[in-house]
Amino acid sequence: MSADPPRSKARAAFLFVAKLASVGVALAVTSFAASPTWMHVLGGSIAALVLVLAVSLAKGRHIVTAFGLLATVPLLVFSADLGMDARITSAPLGCACSYCIGDWEMAGLSFWPFEEPDGWFAFLAPFAFPIVGALGALVPLLLVRARDSFSRRIRAAGSLLLHAGSLASLLLAAALLVHAFVRAGRYPAADTYLASLPELGVLPPAQGKPAEVLDHRHSRWPAMLDVYRDQVDGLSIERSCNTTASLCEFSIGGQRSCQNLVERSAPVTLRRDVVHDFVTIDDGSNRFAFRGGTLIHVTTSDIAAAISPAHAWLSVGCAGMLLAMGLMARRRRAEERLDAAAFDVLAAAAAWIGVAPLLAALPMSF
Image (tube, rainbow, N blue to C red; front, side, top):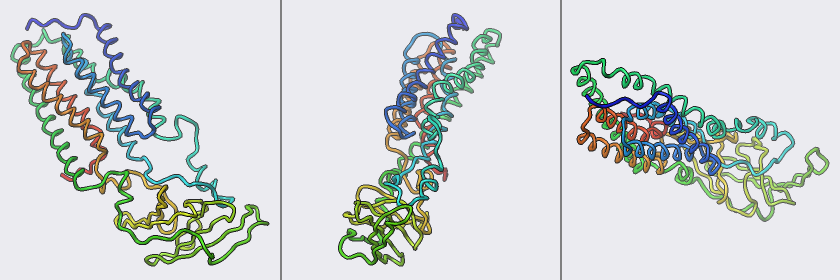
């Protein structure tokens, strides 16, 4: 085989780290443009696919960079898994009693960027991608450098094995993508899931004569409260509305939530999720969830088995598969065995960069 190795280890290492750092920077920049972690994953996946395309079009031997890029795929899975922890319920509109701050707001308080998974992932991504990618490139770099010491039979067997592995990964990625589209057709998206739950009833606006008026003007948390009580599908509902404000505390089963959750002038729709055992309330602007009378947060991972993957992830998955198939087709025209091996790894990387985020969103039922 007449192919020459990369010009120098230092040059190959520098170019590789620079390219992989661009993927990390794309994730970091995306984090400041949009807060959900899935947007970071989307930005990183697109940047990685563009990098694969650029590498495949350039002249030379790119198997080192290709292997390094493939090694970063688990980071996309990890970041997508963090995105599954994103809340789909709203934040409370305000405190309704003196002790709710410690119960709700202060529980997860810490300093940026570690307050939320989105923040610290975006902070670490520019460092994690080049480091993981560099480690993944060490083995192929040694193989490329030592290729002349292998016999022709060993090189041919290695090329055949790599091609078989690339085809297997492409088929598995295609199966995952098909499974994702089937789920997308059967289940609602995360942002529409709560609105798709069966309706229990609708409470009218908290207006007119209240069931009770509570005078707390001389308490530590002074207020005059109009209390409205309703029964919906066996649930005891209570709205306590400050007479000088437009917001109401909402409670189920007599247990105070101590949070202003709904507008006084808005009707409130109640829905029940039997599978996940919670009740939601919706005043048209905000959605909250209760389980056993306790106000809870609902995250994407809590309902993962009942929702479809993000449609943007599906689009990136399709782009990855198309790029992978194009690279596999180009492999047939590769004259050098090393070039063919590089196309094999590039195709596998493109396929898995496309579908990696789906692994965090899909319950593996097959």
